[in-house]
Image (cartoon, rainbow, N blue to C red; front, side):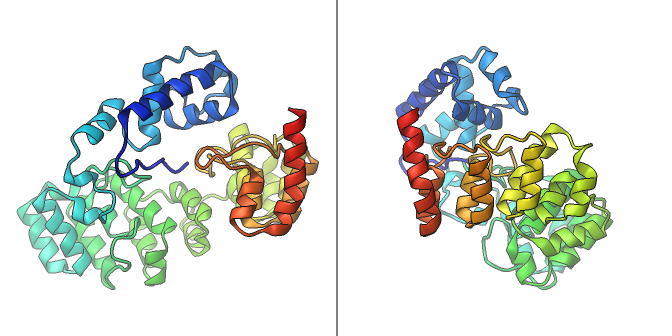
Amino acid sequence: MPVRVLPSNPNLDHLKHQAKELVKAHLARTLAAAQLIREFHPRFSGASDEAIFDADFKLSAAQLTIAREHGFPSWTRLKRRIEKPVPSDRLDLPHHERIEDPVFRHAVDLIDAGDVAGLRAHLKQHPKLARQHVVFEGGNYFRNPALLEFLAENPIRRGKVPQNVVDIAGALLDAGADQAAIDETLGLVCSGRIARDCGMQLPLIELLCDHGADANRAMLPALVHREFEAVRGLIGRGALVTLPIAAGLGDVEAFSRLLLAGTAEERHLALALAVQFGHAEIVRMLIDAGEDPSRYNPVGGHGHSTPLHQAALAGHADVLRLLVERGARVDMRDLLWKGTPADWAQHEGRKEIEAYLRPLEEAARRNA
């Protein structure tokens, strides 16, 4: 789920109110509260709705959830951002302009300029730099990147990568970039469009995998962001076609083979991906196998929304009607914008889908 970015003039009292409301929603056992807590409170990661509802959930836990929902690791850090902001908090600036450490900032500038010789000299002068990280809070991702991660141009800062970016990556790898940074960089390369647009996505995949990057970890980010060329490249480097990946690719044969052995978590994610990409046959198979079409999608699969929201967004009318016919709730609201699937269809200008959903939504409200 994308984090909820703070407004330009955030109000701490309003955030305190949100935390109190979350405590009340937890006591009321609302599905939206369970989904929010599951995604953003580390103690409840992967927990079932019932486990979350049965747990003691105090105001301090709600405040931590709200802080992490807004991209901060703790309520204290969120409070500091509001009361004493620093230059790195400027979300309106590209990330390289928010770096306060001049040594690290110069290294990023050398990466962006494609200056391999200058970067190697700078890394030699500052040998700890290749393993150093910087902190960016309040955003969706890229919160604690190492130097290596900046070359992926994801998030977009300048809109291009240098044509010698593979050599730049080699310099950073030679200087001792850590394994976690290598894995994170592969995920960023595979889920962003700039490296692909510049013809550098596959060469970077090859280099990073040669240096031990985990191809399996990058598969879901690549698929969710429709980077199918990267998905094929990762499979070529040994990444497994799991049940969710087969569902997202629409590979019915592989999906059928894997379905019986799939875990509950895999089937949940598989439904989210099959709906997102409009694979009606796989959606039908999953519902037949017992998947609930009204559940919020899992973490990593647009968890702020339900399958019906995603079908309405993408305009997959056959999948959407299938979900409704099989019991999907039409009145559930997403967690970010508080819209129903019909609202999402309206936002995307999908008039036929909206016209189909509105009467059903109104009927559901009357019968609630």
